[in-house]
Structures are given as structure tokens and as C-alpha cells.
Image 1 (cartoon, rainbow, N blue to C red):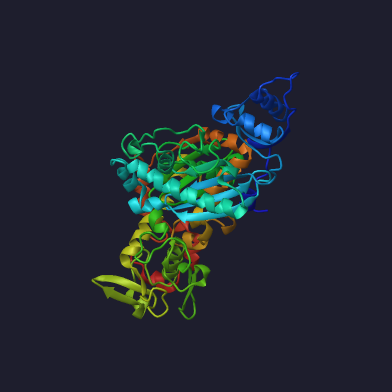
Image 2: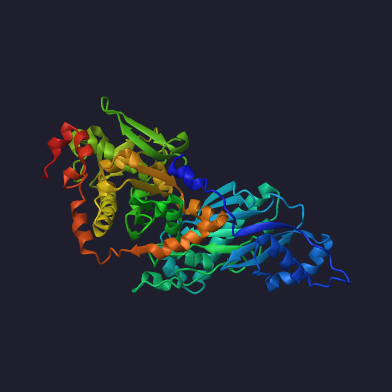
Length: 536
């Protein structure tokens, strides 16, 4: 079983959300114990705890519910800070019909996973574009919008309404009511956490960059307006300051790096590139603006991964013919980050761009055209395109990618230097997110984005934010781990790091000004490309 499978199949221990089958002795003249006390005593015996309570909101309906069921019931409790609290009562025959939901609060895409409470198995999963995008493509724009009258409420409302819509669709397929979802976890960056809870994000992006809260308390689902069981506990992953959010805490949990003796890296590329290095004894993290181009967000034909989007590109070494793969084998509509990295790496290896990323006209031939004074490289003809228009890569597109890849490599280099570890010493290099699912490590090495390590050291984990959120939902131990992870992290601030700027300049070449750092690339580079290099 590889690391990804281990992360997705976390063994279920005694969960912090439990459904108890209770067969209470009905009251009588000889036993006039209050209904609430009767329930608490029986539950305490099964939970092996003398700290059990019923929230006031559940007291009003308790007598009728117990009498209608003949004092037989399925009672669902959750544990927080050592105390078990009642969530709700269900008919006694309720078995396998209770659920919990894990949510990845992505700034671009939100993913919801529905799990069976009893087994922890996934029953459904839905992803959708974050509806907040229509108010701002990026987080900073949304934070500014939140400062407008009614802006924060609108941002929260858009997100919660769309989330509720997804949750309703999921439970309908299971043949139950939303009330059957009795718990939730949510992991997102610091700003998304604030939007989700309706907290003012104003100071997150202003010196000295302070969130409202780093470790939110558990809230009842009704408080932010989530349309599941009103008393269902919602655990929002904590963050480490303004730029390192709960999604990365979830990622660390999913990777298991905090339990390993060897030092490993975790990289998650989204709006920003976020990096963690460490082991069971220590963790250091940092974040930087390397994400947009690597998500395909800079190129004119750049798109997020989806049907018809180019995710793989190869150039035949003999015929120079382009071999293009699209998601779901649909006609090409655009290109995502992994495809852009592949394309740039292939162009470099064929000598069509030089080490500065500049097109070499004599090598590009008829594929290179001039549009308004800007060189464009023809990738897909209009006839073969799914849009009916030619898909081209411009010089500014490549320049943007090179800046992003340079930032990515420099982030890795800087944090490794800070902890006095050579990148070559890293035994496991975990790559998370949608980007990590599609990326070809060899192409990323070729352009100098990630270290030149043996390929078996790179492990793609997929959506670690969701995997970690799901693990913490069904495992009391994992729930405990998230706060241990957060307390162990030291955050490295790159904005004031002079070494970062020095290293960044050296990384703005393909693969790097220091070729000895990338021996595998040096072996691949074509003779034609060597001839075209004019920088030593």
C-alpha cells in the first residue's frame, strides 16, 4: 500500500462522534428519574464516561421523542474537551443511515465528501467551483469586498448556500434527510476559514497580518447556517497565522510526515505555493506566490484542470510531432499547470526555447508567429481545437511560468537552507492538491521547479486537505493530532528574507544558472539547445 492509499484508508479508532443504541427502562412510580438524567446515565455507561451532557436546545423535544419510541433510541454524541454532548436522537432502527461530511474549502474549488458514520467509508463526493469567484478571482479581492457594506455576509452566504445545495443532493441519493449528517470538518486557508465562519478578514492582509482567530472553537452547524443537523459539531481546522491555513494542517495529517523519523517535504500548490519540511520532532513551513502560473492561470490558454484541458505534452524526439493528451480525451480547450510545465520542458529539450525561456526562431520554424509584436508558438491548430481557435503559447506566458517555477524552487531552497538540510537529503517529497495529481515530476525537474531527486522520492497524494479533513472526522486520534501539528510548526516569513531574493534571481533560468544542481537535465539537453545558449 502506497502513501496515498494509507492516507485515504486511515484506520478508524474510537471516534469522537458516536451513535449509541440505547434501550432505556421507562419511568414508573418507583423510578421517577428525569428523562434527561435517564438518558445521560445510560449513555455514560456505554461511553465509559461520567461527563455527558444534553444541550438546552435538545431538552424541549426529549420527552416526546423518548415516549414515541418506547424509550428505545439511537443517540448520537460527540466529544469535545473531555465532555460528551448529545447531538440528536433517532429511531432505534437507524443503522447505517447516519453520516458525517468532510469539506475542502478551496478558494477556487470546494470539495465535499460524505462518509458513513458507522464504517467511515466514503458514500459520495461532490466538487464545485467556489461561487465567491464571481465577487473576486483571488482571495485579496474578496477580502477587500468583505469590507464593503454587506460584503462579508454576501461572501459567506454564497459559500454556505452552495455547500448546502451539495449536501442536499448527497443525502437525497442516500434516501435520508440532511438531519442525518451529524458532524462536519472543514479545512481551508485562513481567509476561506474566515469567510466560512463569517469572521472579518480585514486584518489578514494588512500589517501586522493578524487573523480574528487561529484555532476556532467547535461550532454547531446552525451557527454558520449549514443545512445539516442543527446541533452537529463543525470542526474547522486551525491555521498558523495569515498565510498558513488549516488546509495545510490537514495536508500534514494526511501525509503522515509528522510521525516519520526521516525528514520529508510537503508541497501544495494552489493560489500560493505552500511548503512544509520536517519530521516527528519538528516542522517548518512557509508560503509564497508561486501558484497562479502553475495552475495554468497565467497563460492565455491557461485553464483549471477539467474535461478538454491539456494535461500532458510530449514532443517525439525523431519526428518533432507533438503528442497532446487532454483530460477525458476531449478536444483541446486550454492547458492546465501540469500541461504547461510539460510543454515548456519539451520545448527546452528540443532547443525551441533557450535557458532564459526565450523562443529560438530557427528551431521553432513555422510554429512561431508574431501577434501584435509578441512571439506566439502554435500548440494546437484551430481545426484540432475544441474552441475553434488556435491554441498558442506566447513569450509572456513562458516568462510568467519561469517566474513561478523560480519562486517555487527558491521557496524550497530557502527553507532547506534555513534548517541546514540539503535538498538531496530529502527521502520523501509529497506533492498535494490537484496540481500534484497531474504533475509529471520529470518535467518539473527539467524546468528547474523542483529538486533533481530520484523520481521514486516524489509521492503524489491528491487532495490532502480533504483526506486530512476526513481522517480527523472519523478518528479521535487524528482530531487530537491536528492541534499537536499546529503547535509544532515554526513559520518562516519570506517577505523579509533577503536570501530568498538572492536565490530567486539565480533560479530564473532553465533549469538554473547552476547546472550542477540538475544533472539529469544536463544529460537530456539536446545539442541544438546547447548551441543556442548564450549565458554561461
